[in-house]
Every structure is written in structure tokens, then in C-alpha cells.
Amino acid sequence: MNCLSLCVLCVLRGEMSGIDAAVEAALARGDCPGAVVVVVRRDEVVYRKALGHRAVTPETVPMTADTVFDLASLTKPVATGTAVMHLIERGKLKLDDPVAKHWPAFAANGKEAVTVGQLLLHTSGLTADNDLKDYAGGRAKSLDRIAAALKLEAPAGSRFRYSDVGYIVLGELVERITGKPVDRYAREHVFEPLKMADTGFRPDPKRVAPTGKREGKIILGEVHDPRAFALGGVAGHAGLFGTADDLARYARMLLRGGELDGVRVLKPETVKLFTEAHEVPEGKPSDPPKKLLRSYGWDVDTAYTAQRGEGFGKTDGFGHTGFTGTSVWIDRPTQTAVVILTNRVHPDDKGNVTRLRREVGTAAAKAVGADP
Image (tube, rainbow, N blue to C red):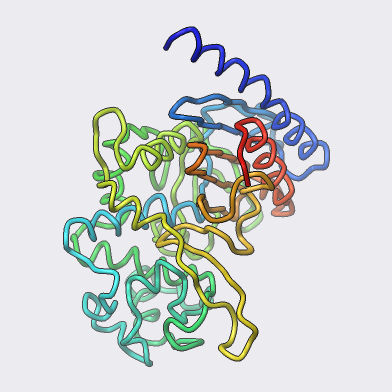
């Protein structure tokens, strides 16, 4: 790196002070016990800091930058979505494939027309979450109930409704097509090639940030999401754990068109397919139209984009959030990625980091000179 580049990095790091202020204010409000934030700009990490605490009970543990977090719904794009794109790239799956082509039992109860693309866009018509009782009796019985018993809430393709069930189905498709569960397929084709050493399912609890409670005990090293937990810790919608540094590497790969450190994970055209915006319908067909944007795996402009903040543009970026307090935003024009990892559900499931996400995104956009 030359002297000019070093100077630019120093200036950027100085201008990121707004992130410190946003996180410290969130900690003071009790919105989360701690946070790790990493910002990438033009393929360089320009901000990396851990603030607050990893745990506050049964003992206080300081937050560290290498803390492993329950990534919650970041599982959807980072593990499942990337695996699906990898299969599409290899010709083993198509966006317009009916799910029932690969999982015949799924056609029951009017679901025969639901496509892979609709699952990725959350326009399948499936419910957001089916009853927890459906997950009794183990993984096989749970998936059988999804395939055979679930009905659509709306005609396939008619509306956008964020659905965990849809990504559970996608995770099952990965296994049915490859013979490998989604955790193994993602590890072999995404995480290991990218050297994301701390990213995976069912982690060693060492360095893991605890989340909420299950049966009166703090959850540590097990997935917080009850449906993913019932499925054995591996599901298409939740169950992934990882660090901010690993997610920064993943984001750099996408910003570089699918390649990092000489290793290609996806082709440039596949990255474009994965991340470019598509309009999705909201509500009933009789409702006044509202323009919402999703990509095949990522949010672009809906009610789920607080982490974009007020500086990055609304159509040229993409990102995702996770229930436990995690988020990623990637802005193409400025070649910026903002990773925010918290365990806001620790210790009592009452934290809220919507404001923190918005303020950190705004501060990062200002620092890199984004033009909304």
C-alpha cells in the first residue's frame, strides 16, 4: 500500500467517529450489551471495533472483535442463498423450477406452482412461520409437515411476505439436489474457499456471544431461533454463526464480483443475479401499489432496510438483518460494506438495535462520501 492510500485510510478512520458515538449511545440506552462493527471500503477494512460486553450474565465478559455471533437470518443469504446461486451457476437448479420438481411431496395443498425464484424473493405465498408444534418429532417429520400439510396464504407470486418457511424449504432443496445438508454444502463451497474459519453451524461455544433464554437458561453456542433449534441447529433460515471479520471477507467477495484472494466462489454474472433489485408486490392485489425492492437473497428497499441508514442510495445496495441483532449492508457505488453484529437478545430478548443500525449506516455513508 502506498503513502497516499495510507493517508486516505487514516482520514476515513478518523471520520468514522460517528460510529463510535452511535454504538456508545445504544449501549447507554440498553439496546444491546455490546457490538462489533467492521466497515470495508474499496477492499480495505477502514473501521473495526468492539465495544461493550459479550455477556452480562452469569458474569460480565468484555466484547472482543473476534466474538462469534448467532447470525440468525443472515443465514438466508450468506449460507442458503449463496448455496442456491452456486447450484444455479452449475446448472443443477433454475429460478423458474417448481419446488415440486425436486421435492414432489411439496406439491400438496396447492403448492405445485411455487418456484425457487419466488422462495428467494419471499413471494411464494407461504406463511412467515408455521406453528412450532409442526416441529415436534424430529427433522424428518417436521419437513414432511411443511411439504404435505402447509397451505399457501396467497397465490404464488402475488405478494411479498418475508418467510422463514420459504428458506427452510430452500435449505432442504440444497440437500435433495446435492445429497449434502446446507451447512456442509456452504462450508465446502463458500466458507472454506473464502477462509471464513469462524463461520458455520453448531459452533464450539468458546468465543460465542450468548443470546436469550431457553427453558430458563441462557443460550450459549446453540441457535436462538426455536425452529432451527428443533431442526437440529441446521436450517435454511437460521443457525449460522460467524464473526464480523468473516462477514467482511464475504462482502469483499461480492464487491469483487465473486472472487477473493485468487479464489472464485461465484461468477460475476451470478453475483449480479444474486444481488440486483426486483420489484415485488406488497399486500393484496386490490391494495394501492407500493414499490418494494428485493433481490434473489437480499433486501434492497423494504421495511427491513434500517441498516442502510440515510446516506446510501436506495437502489444500488443490498443487505440483510438477523433477529439476534446482526446486519450487513453493501453499497456498490462506494464499494462499501457495513457489518454490525450484536447480541441484542441477551439476556432477556428485550434489546432493540433498529436505531443503532440506522445511525451506524448513516455515519458510515457520511464517512465514505456516499451520494444518496
